[in-house]
Image (cartoon, rainbow, N blue to C red; front, top):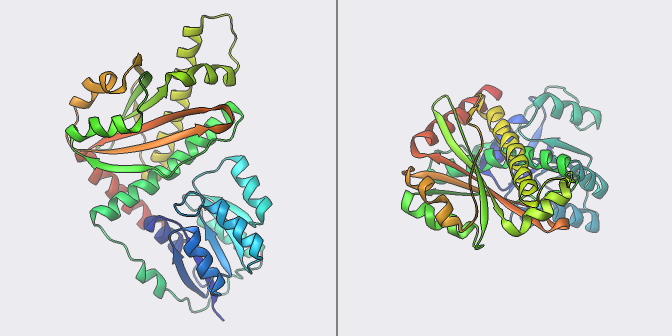
Length: 341
């Protein structure tokens, strides 16, 4: 008898990756959901005995979905599959009743071992139902490409969040990345929308590999600087300005480095990095980034808003990829996906 499984993730690209990771020979019927609310409807309909659940989703995220499953005592086994791999995220979901937690991108061997250890999958070859996978087919439209980029950054964002959480000893709230394809004249307006504060500081770092180049910007609201210094517990023998600058550079290095490592892993490339550059401090964002923006034509702009709510700290990571890099990125993602399937 086929096992009804549900893949609940807001990214079509991620859903396809998850479906292709299902062990060969497992007799399953696959359903898909784009958020927790849709996922609960599938589970209530008896089509989700085993659920692969993402955390960062619109409408209803993974935490809210898991709480509803527990409250309603729905009959399903939940395995979290997420780019957010912070220890606190794992602990919270396991406490809510998830049986395991897997980081993206999927390690097929680890997935098979987890399924086998819980008696969900025996490894015995049977007829496998894949009709649902065909309905969630690959595509190459602009929307599908942007979805693939968003999922790529979602995973890299999770790596960076984990590194920050370890550095600061606090849980880092992670958003759904905001991905836009923009002309250079639109980029200035988009940047202004990201941060409306009168005074900000920004650190920039370039990167390049295999025809892919880009720039990463970390944008800090100046009112957050002292909170970051206090959280990092620096030796207070330095001046306040020096401590704040050291904190901004340290956080930027860790955030950008971890994010680029996450991108490298997924694209199977090794990025060369420029040294971090302080673009400016205590300025309006538009003025601070004006010269930087001029060099870009059409770009893919990806904005990630990190927050440590317990400490009233928030800052933005902005990834910029020029037009010619985007096809290289998508091509690498597709090639890596094919190699893994």
